[in-house]
Amino acid sequence: MTATATIKATADSRRRVTGAAAVLGAAALWGTVGPAQVLASSAADPGALGVARLLLGGFALAALCAGGAVWRLVVRREVFGWILLAAAATGVYQVTFMHAVDRLGAALGTTVALGVAPVATGLCARWWTRERLTPGWVAGTVAAVLGCAVLLSPWQSPADGLGVGVALLSGTCYGVYTVAAKRFLQAGAPALPATTLTLLLAGLALSPILVLRPGHLTDVNSLSLIAWTSVAGTAVAYAAFVYGLDRTSAPTAGTLSLAEPLLAAALGILVLGEQLTLPVLLGCLVLISGLVTVTVMDSRLRSRSR
Image (cartoon, rainbow, N blue to C red; front, side):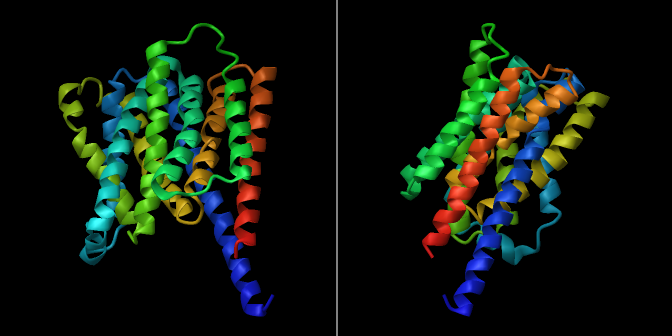
């Protein structure tokens, strides 16, 4: 291997590592949303909380974006359709996720929703981009989803059927968003403005919920919850996720996002007083093994392909 090739391989490796780290960081921030919602005990409508989170998070990102020339790049025909799809998926995801947590609790709602997300991401990537699902991705994803299933074992009592259905819809929309975001990045859209527009379009489309169900949104608990989830759980998290998505594959990003229920389970134990049972510990370990497998196998495969 020549010196130039070695330098390029090293740079590519660092790019993949920073991409994976960014996705994991985003998942960690998202993992705080469910526990924060439970801790705040807000009486506001979960859908209204989700819309407020989208709008304020979008405006926070907009303040960081450059001028008009950059915005023109996100309304090009080959980009804007994917942004609209990402916005639709984001809007449905936010509202359904908040309702799932409201009905099922932080740990269960997050685990069910994110458990289906990597499968949805992989299938959407295969369908829309013809991206090959590698054996490493399959093995790691199976392990990670199995870990999520084990995490569900403490809740053996019959779960709220509607809550589970809403959580599954939420996770599916997460997968659709991941692949749509990957496509608008591949089409040349600047990451931060495209992400900002996605959040704002989703929030504006769902804004009637704020008019129809405004109750308790201005309570102290609601305002503190909205402040955290809109800035850290939306603006920073989405910016980090898209940054990482630009540096790794959509299926890999989808699986790495399973760090979210992992953190939600940890916060449930440390903050909400949930018990650390053997199934929870085992589920966390299996989930972590899946995340590590996907990251390592993806890095090795991409290195060999260069």
